[in-house]
Amino acid sequence: MAHSPIGKAIPNVEYDDFRQVIGAIKTEAVKKSEVLEVMSSENMDNVGGLENLKEWVAKRRACFSQEAREYGIDTVKGILMAGPPGCVAGDTVIGYNRGQRNSSRRISAQELYRKFNGQKASPPPWDLSLPTRIHSWDSETGKVFYNEVRGVFYKGRKKCVRIATDTTGGITLTHDHPVLCEGNAFVPADALRLGDRLLVRGTMRPRRKNDYSRWITKPRIVIEGLNYYEGGWSKTVLDPKGLTYAYRRQHRARLVVEAGMNGVSYDEYVYALKFTPDHPYTLTLPRELEVHHLDENPQNDAPENLQVLPSNEHNALHREQSIANLSVDYTAKARVVRIGEAGYREVYDILMAEPFVNFAVNQGIIVSSCCV
Image (tube, rainbow, N blue to C red):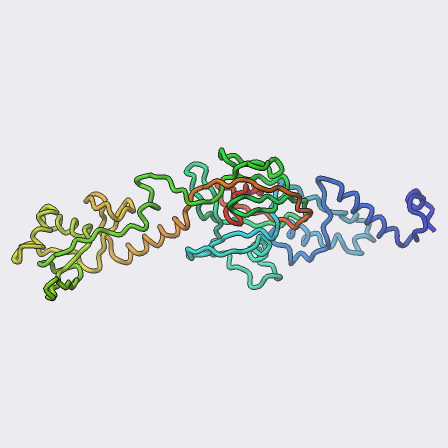
C-alpha cells in the first residue's frame, strides 16, 4: 500500500498504479479548464502543418531518451499550444475549387484538412502547387468569390453549438466562432438569437452598368444581310415563295473596326456591304485576329472599347478573366430558426488569403477565419 498524501486520498491503490491513476486525475482536471485540452497520443507523421514544432521535436529527440534521463535531463511534461478561438465541426461541408476548374466540388472540413496537409490517412495527397479556393466575402464590394486557402488546421475537440437557418441549412461550430450577420458584423455563435438575420452567399447582384457579371451571358450583336461582304459567315434563308438565298453575317464589333480600316463611317460601310455590289471597301481583318471588348461588355461596340488581338491571346485573356470571376455571387439574408447544444466535436479552422479572412460553408453561411 502507498503511504503518501495521495495514497491517503486514494486508498487501496498499489504504488505501481499511481502513474495511471494520477494521469486520470490530471485529465479530469484539464477537462474542467476552459484553456487546456488533453490530446491523445499521435504519430507526428500524421499531423499536418506545424513544421516549426516538428523541427523542434526532431532536434531535441535525444532529450526524451532513457540516456537523457540517466544523465539528469528533465523530460518535457507537455506543450501548451495557444491560438485564437473558434472552429467549425469536422463534418462541415465546404465548396472548393482547385486549379483552373471553374466548377465547385464539396468536401468536409476534416477531409479538407487531411488532403491539404498531405496526411497518409487520406491518399492521395493534393499537389499544393495547384491553388485551392473557397468562397470568401469582400466587405467593400459585397461580392462572394473564390479566395485562395493558405492553411487548414485541426483545433482539437471542443464544445459546439448548432445553428440552423430558414434558407441555408445550418452549421455546427464552437460557441466563440464569429458568424457574419446583417449589418456586415461578425458575431460570436453563442451571441446569436432566434430571429437574427445572417448574411449568406446568394445571387443578389448589384445593378451597376460596368459589372462584368451582368454582361457575361449576353451575346455579341450580329449584323445580318451583308450580301456583298467577303468576311463573316453564311446564312441560308427560305423565303415565303419557297426560294432560298444566302447572305453573309458578321459581329458588329468587327465591322466597326473594319470601317475604320477602310476610312469610312460604320453606317456607310454597312450600307455598302448590304446594297452596293462594286463597293471599294475590301479591307477586312484576317481570320487569325479577333476583337476584344475592354470593358467586358460584348454589346458595347464603341471604337474606343475595342481592341484587336491574335486569337490565342484573346482566348488566354478570357480564360484568365473566367478564373478571376469564378462563381462571383453577392449576399442574401437567412433567418436563424434554431439554436442548440451540439456536444463536443472534432473541429477545424481555415486560413484564407488576406485581406479576406473569412470563408463560406455548407449552403452559404459565412464565418470568420480565426487563424489570423
